[in-house]
Amino acid sequence: MAIGNIVACKVHSNAASQQGCQIRNKADVISALEEMLAYPGPYVLDVLVPNQKHVLPMIPSGGTVRDIIKS
Image 1 (cartoon, rainbow, N blue to C red):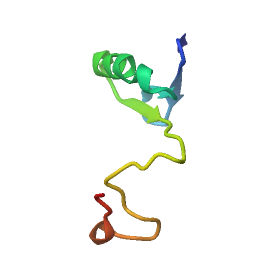
Image 2: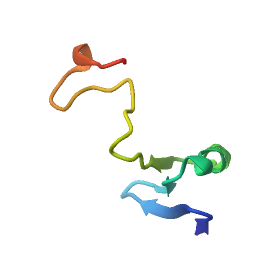
Image 3: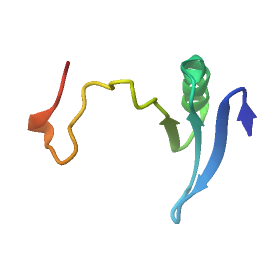
Image 4: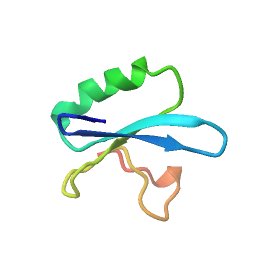
């Protein structure tokens, strides 16, 4: 199922069926969150962020929670 720029797919694990979608645009976040919250079971929301954007807080590769970057 596709909703605008949202690509939705079903993910099947060995134990249970899960619903999920992937979003690429900031404008799609609200509708994806609404869909996720309305789903009665497990749901995976995959949000793609361009490499040039800093997502904080973050733990550097190979680091621990003590190495967290907040700004």
